[in-house]
Each structure stands twice: as structure tokens, then as C-alpha cells.
Length: 147
Image (cartoon, rainbow, N blue to C red):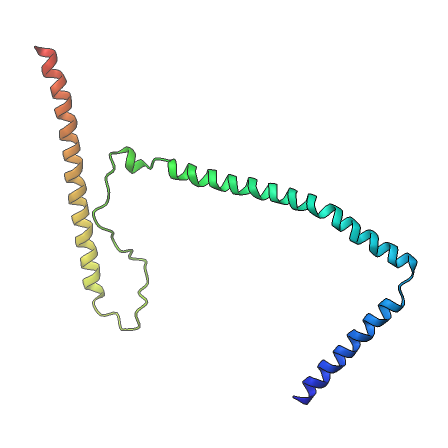
């Protein structure tokens, strides 16, 4: 602990000595140079802040436009009539994070297969209903033309 305190004390003394030497060694040339650097910074800073602010606003506007564009896009499922999947099938590639043994892995596989079959049946039923509706619309126009 005393070693750390000695090191901190020596660092503080070195900083004080360096600052004292810096102020003692300032001549007219170094003072003018320092004033020019500080003045240039003070003069240019507002313009730099304005430029970076403008470019940042443009970047935010571009990001907002991209998010609005993505939100406005119509997905293929919406174009087909908004069919949604009735249930989500768990991925077979997913790794379980449980620490227990792999008991019941066959049961999980069987359950996935049952869910897949149920989804296929539901999708075929929905597609048949949609085809029947289209057939009824066409039939309606054909009946009107015959009369």
C-alpha cells in the first residue's frame, strides 16, 4: 500500500514540476502560437458542429425513410390473401439448453411430425376453400351471361 502511495506522490510531484516549467518557459512566440490555435478552434467549432449536425440529420432521415419503406412493403403472404401459419414448428436444428439428459427426444420428433401434418392439412383445406370461392365467382358470371 505504501508503494502505491509513493508512486502516486511522485507522479503528482512530476506533474506539478512539468506545469511549472511549462509556464516558466512560455515566451512571446509560444504564447502567440497558443492564442492562434485556441482562436482557430473557437472560430471553427460552430461551423463544424453545424456541418456534423446536418449530416447526422440526413443520416437519421435516411434511416427513417428506410424503415418506413420496409414497413410499407407488402409480403407475398399478404398478396395471397393473408394466409397465416396456424402453429409454429420448432426447428430441428435448435439446441436445447437444458442440462438434463436427452429424454423424450423421440417424443419431440413425433410431435414435430404431427404438427407438420396438421399444418399441411390446414393449408390444403384453406387452399381448397380459396379455390371454391374463386370457382363460385366464375360460376356467378357464367350464369349471368347465359340468361
